[in-house]
Image (spheres, rainbow, N blue to C red):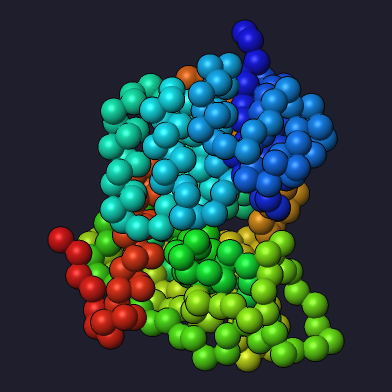
Length: 354
């Protein structure tokens, strides 16, 4: 079988992980690169042996040699490029979030249906972590029983990356759409993807990007500007599902907290589990509570391994060996949840779904 020729659109920081993972897959040829910064596209093409590089994604999509694309651009271009790629007959792996709005999500879903046979996979990378996959097997086997409650927290005390991350027009929002999408999706996926019934959410913009802070370093986007920030600092929400289950979440770019932290847990009527910061399973046996620690290489999320698994899964889907576990429908449901939290905060009321 000929190698699958892949084009990577957007050569920013996250693209490096895509390039490395494609390079490690023997069924793939990194064929082309596109970036608005043509020099950066050329540099990535030379580094990874791509035959072509482009400044315009339309030019890359017009190349009939390209079989599939990874979309690693700003959030506000995800829908436009995904739809164009599907119409050009390409398989698509689009970084999370799927897009910026629910309306865009519906448009992408229509494009998937209209261009049947082409894979669109949403980059919910935490679904592909070893700790997630192990726990999912326990849950699917009924060991935790009915999952009725989950909670997720991803807190940065000083971690607004600035640049496009801090520009609502390009990003669609702040920590909720950047960090929250990961932990909310992780819980929702492990809960069996129940339908949302209602959302009550809050967002706060009290601290800005805290560019005044000295003596403490943090990640900054390539286009970091200390004077520009239009996204929230913190978001929290309680999400209720039609099956009676509920999820509590809080995420921040910046908060007067002691340290960065992540904690994700799910609870069922036969057992519970903490998946972050380390996988632990709690159950009962002989009227005694037992804490179980699986013997796996990494009890916490390994980003490099997770993204490699995600890329390998995408390639397997293209080869028709399996179906994606991160389809467009899941991306659309996640956009409904994120948009619902923002709407609830804006209107200061609970949002109900039909």
